Image 1: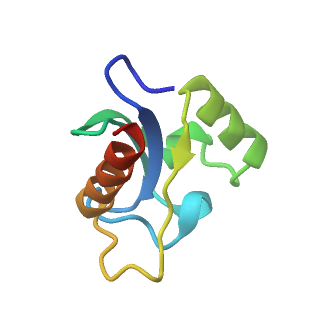
Image 2: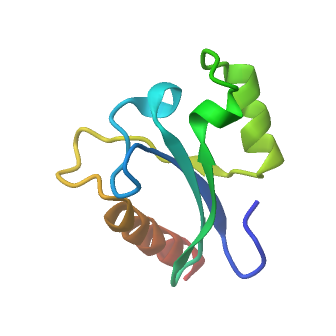
Length: 103
């Protein structure tokens, strides 16, 4: 659930902080969390994956708990059909979608 004034809270797996990871949620380096409204987005947090999983193998139950604890509404993953998987571009597209649904 997004913070007050926002419509969605999304989690994005990344390796460099600029693009969505092609490795998916299992093997990315970081998770970035953003609050998104019909006008803007705001960084809500950053998690280093190796620290969160205590340098152990990825576990869907632990990941589910992470999403539940941080009240994540959507997970944005790499899309092969997009020419550009830069985080800011994808978030701007999501803002347009939210704006259309709230108008």
